[in-house]
Image 1: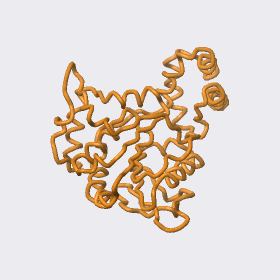
Image 2: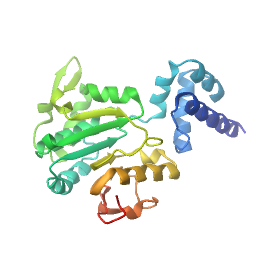
Image 3: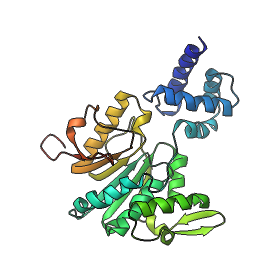
Length: 278
């Protein structure tokens, strides 16, 4: 009975977030969302989700912290090195044929994946012809991404991933260590744009050649997954590439026919180039 009451209160809380702040989590997978909301409820020392709803509606300072619970901010540089190795070995040769490029990391969190791609593109000589977009619904996340500052104790993992991904330089070439932090070189941000963008409600990001959106779709219910994949399809140029997470697939998507499987292991897809595919 309590679980059913919790579910009702959570639905009302999500409605309140949408109507008060226009953050729409109503299409997110409930099991995962509920776990994170339980953590938020405990953090704010609320006895019920209704009490948490009251706090969110009447205290605007609660919202930023709530977003940190509702949006999963787990990433690392060159995470799943084989994904970046596949981009380097198989996608980059296609991208070299374009005079200018656009890359979009959707759900960029604190920017680890965006910086990974910028470094990869620099090493492959494509950075100067590319604009990189990093978007997230959490303003705190993309402010961290803009800063490009990471805890020094994460650098060993980042370095190992970079090497395993086929990195052609030393990761230490790209940051300065100081006071327990690694500050990544400002030149990496020279061609990067960070902004707010919601896969739930916002429109197409046009003319992308590569979209990377990994470990985001798993938090969505099917209808929202379809919306997001449709958005990626319409945002890509013909024969553009889409990368998703290792536990994600387009197989059951309403837009699956718009893509060809480019690398099954790396979860890379290529948009078909024929008429009707944008």
